[in-house]
Image (cartoon, rainbow over all chains, first blue to last red; front, side, top):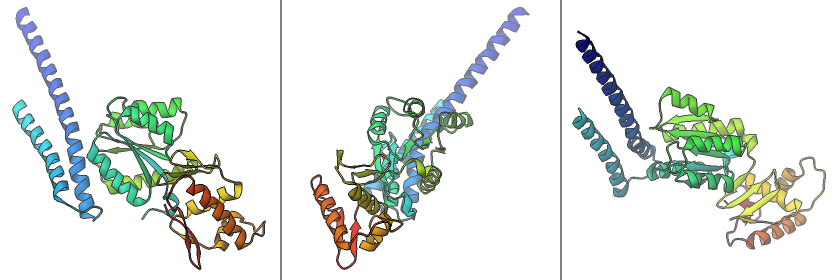
Length: 80
Length: 231
């Protein structure tokens, strides 16, 4: 009986630590997504309002930012 | 558009992502601010000491020294009330509270709208405008409180009248000022009678002193109308 209780305690401890680890990872991901999103949102806003003009270089640079987001999404999928 | 009173105010942007930095600089320049940049914590400290900007836009996660540490350093060691807007990916409530506790005047979370950032800067400067009388245009800086004028790091040796003249011009960039207007700005109560000719002589001297430091023609003559300061 004691063994069962100990096992149960160990298991719940593991679950808590896994959960904690996952929360931390999600926080990191949310955080990492913010920089490319800032660039995509910000430059699109500037284009929309005519603050800047678009050219292939700019579009390429924004595509790079959206690739960063894509890579992060793939990492999340792998981690699941 | 930005109120005239904020044109020529100096802004230091501290941001390690080159694209975000570039975008913020585009918006700031277009509003008429004089913009400087730093891409890590060490450079940020150097530029703050060297430039003493009117406002600091500060990312928190920086190579070298963190934004939080820079904010603490500005408040506690420099004892400066320089307005600071934190611009950061740290979105949690506890981070925002921590930011204000460290002495931030505003806290903007990424992703942000650059247009919104501009009005936030304007709002912070409106509340704190009296703290920074300094004006700067393409490397030409005037510090009214200290009575100093600098061109690219070299100080100009000006008479009292030349200094007032220059300050008047820099408060009205890209505006044609008639001799009469200039006199009204300098002698608000008409306490002195100065002839147009005298103004011209002082402007000539001021121009020569500027010319000694830079080939750029800051003070331009507008025929039949007066003078104009071009930043």
